[in-house]
Every structure is written in C-alpha cells, then in structure tokens.
Amino acid sequence: MSGRKVLCASTGLLDHGGRDGRPILLLHGLMGRGRTWRRQIPWLRHYGRVFTFDAAFHQGAAAVGLPGPEELSTERFVGDVAEILTWIDRGPAVLIGHSMGGLHAWCTAAAYPELVAALVVEDMAPDFRGRTTGTWQPWFASWPERFAGESEAQVLFGPVAGRYFYEAFDDGRLHGRIDVWSRLAEEWGGRDFWAPWEAVQAPSLLLEAEYSVTPPGQMAQMARRNPRAQYLRVPGAGHLIHDDAPAVYRGAVEAFVSRT
Image (cartoon, rainbow, N blue to C red):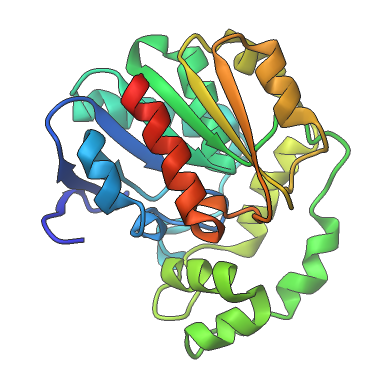
C-alpha cells in the first residue's frame, strides 16, 4: 500500500491517498483490522481519498485493558468514527463497513447525518437478539498462543478467513483479547438496531453473503424498510464477501459509489 501516511499511530489511522474529493473510510469487522482492506484500497482510490483505522480493542494486545460495559457499547464506537471523520475534515464520507463495521457505519449515519454521504454495509443485520457467544468458547480455546504462519491460520479458519485473520495478527499473535471481543458481540444478542437503521438518510448498499452469519431474511428486510437502500445477495460467498467474491464485491461497490 505505497504512499500511505500515518495520521494517528494509536488507532492505526492511515491516509492511503486517492482521487481528490470525498473521503472513503473503511470499517473492519470484529477481530479484524484496518490493514485487512489492503486488496480493496487500490481500486477504491479511484473514487475518493481512502482511510483505514483499527477499532478500539483491535489495536494490539498490549494496548487492551479491562474495559467497562460503557466502553464496549456500539455508541462508543460510533463516537470514535465520528471523531475520526471530524478530524479528517474533508466533508461527508462514504463509509464502507464489514460486519461489525457495517453496524457502526449505519449507526454513525443515523447519529451524525452531516458526516456521511453514503454507506456500504457488508453482511450485517440489526437484530441478533437471543444469540450468544457461548458456543464460540471451545473454538477459541483451540487457538494456539501464536500462529506459526498464514498456513496454520488457514488450517483453522479456511483459506479466505485464515489469510484475513493472519493479516490482522501481530506476527501471528492476537491483536486483542478474546474475552473482550466476545463481550462486544454479546451486546448484539441483547438489543436490536432497527431504529438507527430506519433513521439513515444516506443512500446505502447492502451486500449479503449466500453463507451469511446474519439471521435469514433480515438484510432483504432492511432494504424494504429504508427506501434509500439497495440490496444484493452474493451467491457462493461467505461472510468475507470482499475477499471471498472480490470481483462481485468490486463491481457492486464501484457501481454504487460512482452514482452517489
């Protein structure tokens, strides 16, 4: 990613350059990191100035303390996004979010409409109530303290997710704490986010994987409940659509951002 400029070392906020005009801020998913967008950044530069950052509690294990409940709320992350957009100060931005990042994107658009020009939401829905991370714990317990290389990560996670997670890790080590990540996801099992979604005024593109992690039918319902949204289901793709079906993802996003 040549030409990138570090704007804030503590959050990993990077300016990757691009065409003059509106900013494009990429928001990663749970257990991801800003640098996992590296394959999308080159072509997104044609549509604006591209920025990435690491969300709180995804910035390296050494930087993670023991957060209280208020620090793990979606509202806290929305405040972080709004602060970054205000600091960038280049006008309303296109927010492109995967999973958790998609949730944070639409909640930011609802709370701070003046900061958001358009949204891309990838494989995230408003209502996971009743679901918990309890079934994740045995899987987490099987992870090594340090992955020896990308190939080991691919054995555990599969080829697409293994590459993605290994890119997020710090030399094979987790870049955050599993118990904190689990608590972040637990919030989604206790509340829904329909109200902020329905409040979004910016044009939105919703991308759902065929093998989605979202409750069935919810992303299509999102499009029906917000007249400025369009919806695309991507056949054959898993949760990481942007890496699992990169040509379809690129085509859909390019068509959308070129019109908005």
